[in-house]
Amino acid sequence: GAVVSQHPSRVICKSGTSVKIECRSLDFQATTMFWYRQFPKQSLMLMATSNEGSKATYEQGVEKDKFLINHASLTLSTLTVTSAHPEDSSFYICSASSGETEAFFGQGTRLTVV
Amino acid sequence: GIQVEQSPPDLILQEGANSTLRCNFSDSVNNLQWFHQNPWGQLINLFYIPSGTKQNGRLSATTVATERYSLLYISSSQTTDSGVYFCAVETAGNQFYFGTGTSLTVIP
Image 1 (cartoon, each protein chain N blue to C red):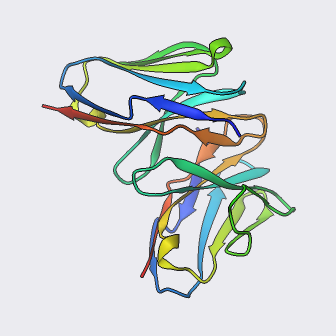
Image 2 (image 1 turned 60 degrees about the horizontal axis):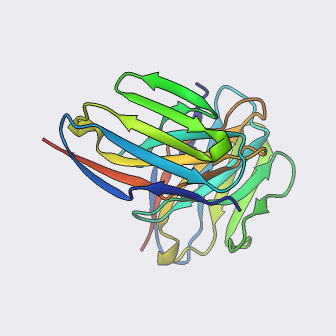
């Protein structure tokens, strides 16, 4: 299947700093990318949908100014957690779709804010 | 949004036993996938199954789209089957809505 690479896989940052997570589609052009969040022992929740070249669409309850999403090219989307706080600690996963087949998931990023 | 519920939430099996995991969803969907999440959090795709039945080794899955449910069968369970199993339904926009998950523990 297609490959979606997410980086970094694990990051620890200080409270108040910003963290950027990258999601790349390695062998296909992803017209749409999705970002999910997973709290410990819970399910994955869709945070936002981003289409290349346009603003992301956020799910209800997700702060746009806290979670900045950029999808500047057909192979790269970034999620920036701004002014991170301990409650932002979570597992973040991206998925990418060409619009022609199913979506493929990245390996996930475990963020810990101390 | 679409509601996706899985049962049971937790399951403990003796090695060698069989099990059935269920996924109910509240609306029509384009597709459905079953995932196994490993201890590192990575989602391992098990089945891409919008309808019908598929089998892969000891695992098989059946989706009855008209009745809005899917089943994952695990036969002759092994300790390596332990982990969390998620079903996720896919909308026309390729968005996935995940179920509540089933945490499976297989004991030797």
